[in-house]
Length: 247
Image (cartoon, rainbow, N blue to C red):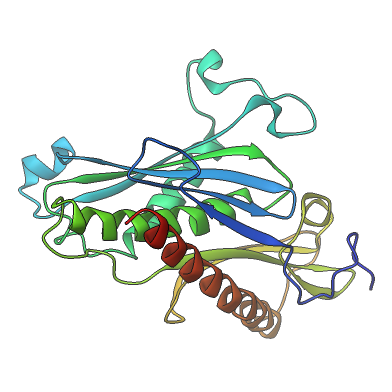
């Protein structure tokens, strides 16, 4: 079955991770995945949430704020600040990114610090949450290394990277890294978050119309892992490039 952009079913869209896209944060990247572009930045605040202090929880915390620019979609989106509250989708995605990134770091080694991950979608063509996770993990890896050099952390709190990719079934064919139009017409739509060592962090899968089998689930996870191995290599390259240019 021919895909919209001519890719093979198991082929990623073109992914480019540009480190230090912003001037002020400890680390940032622009991740481009096909037509989707997300700016991910990491800032460190030398305090922890009140609930951690009240419960005497040791270590630090990692949290995320996610948003989409009004012009990031075909039809202009209303700013959520204009409505006075975040939408349910936004809250879900930023919690997902925060959960995923807490798998990548030793929170005790963060000390009494909070790492804020800001993920801002400037162009959306499917897979924004996956790009946010992948980009934020890359930026966090850079920030942790720089944090050691700057004396923020006594040792590197970063354990291993996490990344995410979408998979789905279209016309009965499993496909990797869906663009928006593919995602909108998928019979099965799934996001897979995985650590670099191959462990699953989260799997979000939904059938549209007909349920899918356990065998199909395994097939889709294998397809996602095939793509993520390539993504992890891109993350490593981006981290090394950033630290060579700006230690």
